[in-house]
Amino acid sequence: MRSAASTVGPVDAMPEEPTQAHRFDLARKARSTSLLEDYVELIADLAAATGEARATDIAKRLGVTHPTAIKAIGRLKAAGLATSRPYRGVFLTDAGLELAKKTKARHRLVVDVLIAIGVPTESAEADGEGIEHHVSEATLRAFARFMRNRA
Image (cartoon, rainbow, N blue to C red; front, top):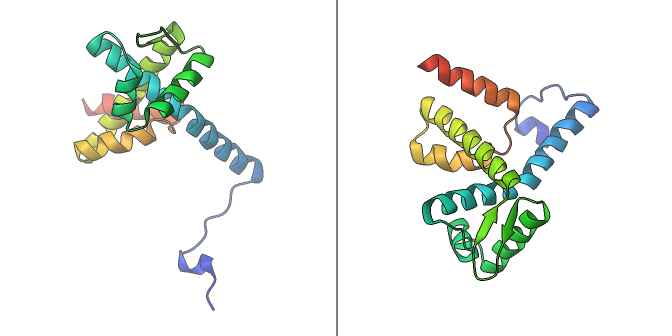
């Protein structure tokens, strides 16, 4: 009987335990912050387009329920990234605006690189939503160099 490993091809050398643990730690941290980054990016976009970001609009645009959006907005507020007012929308703090700006720039760069290597625009936009949260600063610098060198 064949082992599961033999059905997927040769196994690359495994990294040392601390290296592998560090890589998984980075991935876990990226997953935990990706939700907040998606929310602040959307709130900034809605505020720029309409003057405010209402929880109802946030929920619709992210495809989540209103209570889910309210819970996430509560996390943003607890993290000092947003404020809200009764019967008004959600507003980003200076820290929230800075995170939204950084997230948006990272998203655009990832999407631009994907398009530059031949990924269709819609796929690049969809894939960029996930990749943007997991890419390192070193990779972002390499992406930026790649895009500058194409010009």
